[in-house]
Image (cartoon, rainbow, N blue to C red; front, side):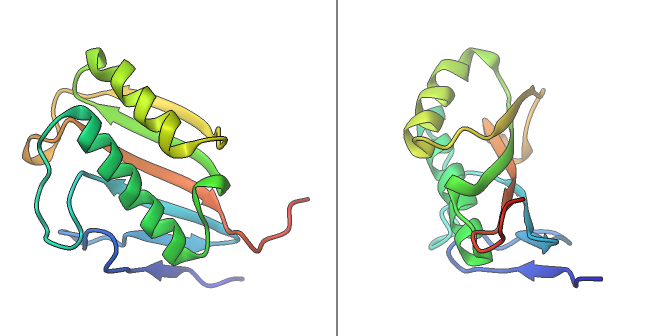
Length: 133
């Protein structure tokens, strides 16, 4: 049985609770929900939905890179938004940042998020060095 590897990187926000930035098992990376927090300063970026989406995706990307994966290896992304009216702007930033990557995706409207954030994203990705069947 393979061991679970916990990921911690200073290039993404340090968890504020009892969880890891990601866990890796069986060639798969499970990224915890990420918010628009600047990892260098810890500042909560509560600006536009575009700014929050970009920062949140970059935090996911930083964790994937630390784990041995990247955006091209995303399998599934879940996007939590506080207002579905933001969806067009979120989708535009998402498409720009992910480029050709088209993982499975779910959009979940939520009443609110911690600290007044407008978006949270979690993800599942394959490791880069794991052969596909």
